[in-house]
Image 1 (cartoon, rainbow, N blue to C red):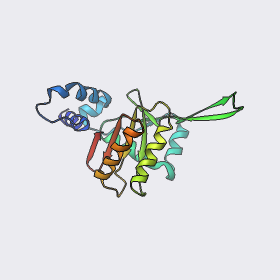
Image 2: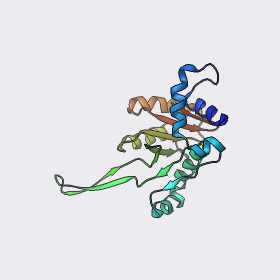
Image 3: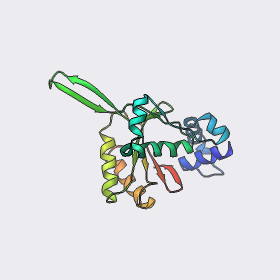
Image 4: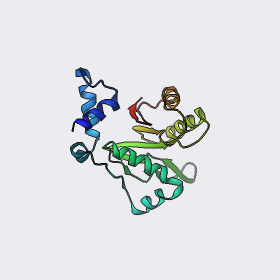
Length: 182
């Protein structure tokens, strides 16, 4: 339980002592975590809306999303992958349309995962933010830098710049040894 509390404090940016004013933020953060993880510290495995979705995500080109969900599970989040698009017929346009949805659900919130792997620095972060902006109903954007050679400091600086210019208010940054809301 103490490790869960410290993890939640670090995630919301609260100091470990003398943080009376941070109580609600820490409490809300703990409410997002899996109760079994809080008691035991055992990682939470992601779940999947359908077996077909699980198989598709575990293919080589999509396994980075599964790894990010597993990293979240190590920190107590139960990530439930959902089908991330909805199709409908637009009668005005006379054609089929697709709306992008968040990758999954954590404690009733819609979460979108982006894993930076390689790329050209600031442009990779910009592309991640552009793609999230096109998704409908995203509550939390998870930006995972653990597989990238980019420095956490640079990625966080660029992410803070783009989150305001793109109107994305909740970004959870995963870096090398750090997890924190920006």
